[in-house]
Length: 282
Image (cartoon, rainbow, N blue to C red):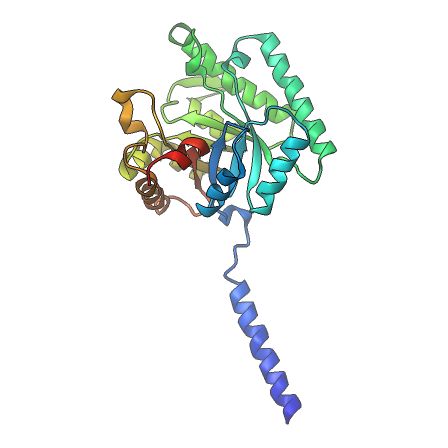
C-alpha cells in the first residue's frame, strides 16, 4: 500500500514539474534585454550593484584595453547575470581609410582577447557610430550614411563569428541603395545588424514609442530583435525633452514599462548611461 502511495506522489510531482517547465521560454528571444551604456571604466562596484538592483542584464562596456582588468569586470558582471558587449565607435571610420584600418586592427585584438580570456568573453561588439557627428554631415550626408551601411555589411560578412549591434537615431529615414535594394537607412541597418538600439530619446512613454514605432514594426516583420532607449541627461537646456533628467529615474522606468507592453516580449530597452542614471534624481 505504501509503495503505491509513494508511486502516486511521485507521479503527481512529475506532473507539476512538467506543467511548470512548459511555461519556461523555449527560445532565447523570450528574454527581454535591459541594457546600459558604460563609458567610464573607472567607476566602482557600486555601479554594478545599482545596475543589478534595477534589473539590467546587458552592459555596453567601453573597455580601454583587452586585458586582465577587462576580464575581471566581465567576470563580476557575469556573476550578476549580466552579459557584456564591447562598446566602441568613431565617425572617422566612415571617412578615413587609415582610421578604418585601426578599426580592423581593434577587431583582431578583440578576437585575440576572446581566445586568451575564454572564461570572460564579451557577448559581442556594440557600435556607436554616429555619422551626424561628422563635420561634413551637412555637405556629405548621403555618402556618410552609405558608408555606414557598407561598413556594417562588410563587418558582418568578414567576421561572421562576432555579434554586431549598432546604435541608430530614430530619424534614419534617408533612402539609399545597397546591394541593389533602395530603402531607408534604418531598414538596411536592421537587416544587416544582429540587433539595433534605436536612440528614441524622449521623456514620455508616448513620444518614445512614437519616434521608434517604424523601426519596431520593421524589426518585427524581418524577425530581428530591437531595443528602444532613453537618455538620462542633456547639456542643452533647450532640449530637456530628450532626457529624463528632470522627471527622474522612477518616471523613466515607468515609461519604459509602459512602452514595453506595446512591443514583443523579446524586444528590450537600453539606458544611456550608467553614470548619469545612478546619479539622477529618484
